Length: 282
Length: 268
Image (cartoon, rainbow over all chains, first blue to last red; front, side, top):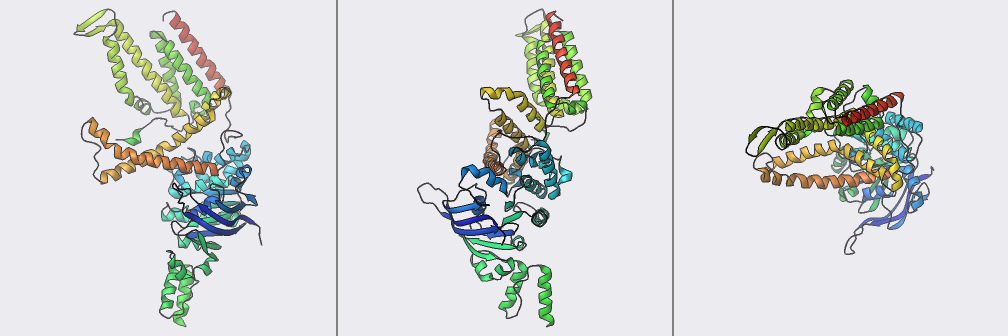
């Protein structure tokens, strides 16, 4: 088994509220993210998935339990920069992550902060922009780009740090369908070709279905953890916590209720069509 | 309101020699130009300043129309200045009506004042038109570096400035969106007196401010995630470098400055 890049142990977190009543957002999360994997974290609004993400590079510190990034305790202040350069983070709104007026200047921001020499920054910026397929736009002004392009620039800005893991907190929530497709494609490329561990926080079933591993959260707890194919078979459980399943699974599930023997593990349209064809011709 | 017309701090990419000069050179030249403007007293001095500005504009290849559009917002200031100088300068009276007293000296001082203000604005605009905001803030940070010794937060100031510049288009876009949203709910931004118009701005400014604070919060977290920890130990992608042309321009600028000063001393 590969070594884990992020590991949480009995992670508990509650926001400090006035009057002392603090709702528990994370209630004992034990999670281990293997290096090189593509993990999706799925959950309803308020399930604690974003809070979990923010623990993975020490933006939030646990109120109980521990979080380790590549063996480093996130509570250790001296390790803060090392933790943040190991786990990069991309947020929902690309506009609020872009610091500079020119694409390449923005991508250079993180290596500049790390004190990388100029020639090396140049190399990293070019490499990161090519990885997200935005190299031609390096001299453009970010505000003139489309949402998907901006989000890819934001991803490049994190890649230029050379992190081993990137956590994306609903990176497609503000994008149109084309932008979503672009960004998801980029994320998969990074995982497969550059070997970067990806943690994708999302509430889109179809995005979650593309991961190697799916973690479902509800009310601050992990309620399911496994390959998407297996997790999505637990249709009733998912529905009980306010989540839906991919449309293909939903279709087969409805058919099963009518007494047909449709398989529940068809995640793509093609698979589903094939399964249904076999069902009819049998 | 034509928000897209705002030219403040706007940059027009180009490849003229002015564009290629080091930003520090351009900032220093602008400062020298302003100093010389205040030294100039009479026709010859102003003539030199006008020739210098005209040739700089010609070299920059920025369209004349764009250059003069920059003067529009301060037109009212120019007119008031001209008016005050025309009628309230003591001297040889040409025409008198009530408290208005037109003098020969007044005409001259009005002409010079108008020239001074317009040239001052035009030369600073030329600086921002030909220098990308990033280079401009880099140049300023670099020039102000000695101030770090007396604990002026130079890096923080330049960071704030570049982020402000970065968010101008974003916030303008947002203002447009909020305006449309409020108009859709029956808000009226265009009619009524000054007070009505000012009141109409409240439903525009409140959401704009709230969203700006939210953006600031998110940006701060995103910057921290990218290991931002102040100016200490920071390197830059682009290194500023003085070239031969910079030296030539600086010497030229200094020469003009001295020449205008000397001429003014002799009353020219």
